[in-house]
Image (cartoon, each protein chain N blue to C red):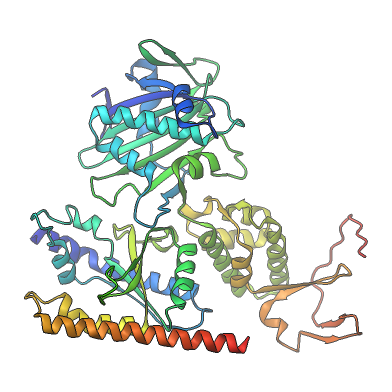
Length: 354
Length: 201
């Protein structure tokens, strides 16, 4: 064993320089990647072992391998399991195959990167960690005749920079293990945390555990609860306005933390953050418009003259608050809305419709 | 096996909690969908789990080396719909809302034979349903079947699936005949429904 920390014995490590090869043939991509198994020594050992030993932190996102054929199979998961439990020879083959898959998933928008795989064992489980570093940043990788060597760049970028993507999978030899992993993308915009399409969708062939429909439902349910708990009309108006604004984020990645901090009146932020389990607050998901509207029950009528009429869905069918009638032969309608004004705002944007 | 029984018995109350949450969750997902007869979830009983854990292949190898992890229907959900053509619609909603590792149509491959039929999905339990409990499972199974498929499966379950002596050919043929009747009823009702829908359009 090359090194150990806490309960993990690091059994294997390999690295490959991986250029972007999306669209290339397998043969060309295979010829482009260079690497080998590596011994973890000195500064490199000191760099990798804490990373390997660390499990989740607040910037981690849980992901699930997909099973496109519906038969409990995923090629990357198979390789990860082989790395976990296979012979050393098989581990070497797997490392190269994973590097190849990463190269084929990477397009020319990315520079050449350093792919590293570390495998460790504990008494009951195996852990496989995959990393992608930008080349020549915190780690310098050089491929020579005797194989790949990695040096930690001292001074220029410290370990604290952690400018990398990672994926960690862990489990027993059970057939159903290794479907769930944890990824980090330290290379993404830190304000709106994004799980990179390249790393998760294209390379790992995985998706976030909190998928689009489910993430939106969790958010919608939380907002619905706040709507019901805060019947004061000003809060209601603020929540309805937040929902309408959220519509502009449809099909974009968002977190519940983002919604609380950037879309809700400050009086309601704490309510939203307190109504959702803490571990889900920072998990990004793609917002689904239909799911949001279905569960929140906020309806909006957009008229061709630029007017918007929005409100709780159930109040549209209550004649005390809303009514409409046909007006004219051109399809125009006349709308009557009844209520007290609790907020009025003007924007600087001048719009002329028609 | 005693240790396995003890561990599963200890786990069982948590499985029941998760089953209740999943049932509630799925009912919310499908609440606006027409022609759904029932949605029920259950935790697999201790005896049923032990029986399954003891299954072996023909060469006497155990089927489940790690039964506590590998048996994926410790929590199972059954969705019963009216017609065959409702099954794909409900399946699509399940695939949208749950990350799924298996989506298989279970039916007799031989067109001359009739037996159990249903759509089976093995799904990962969503992280928002765990909350304060950890039942130490990651999966649950959803079976989607029609009313007729469900009726046959329930009636057949204790007879042909669980008995420890092989049924004779005459009885097996009768059970298959009943499955064929269920299949036929499904086909006919689906055709009537489709014709009625086309007429209304």
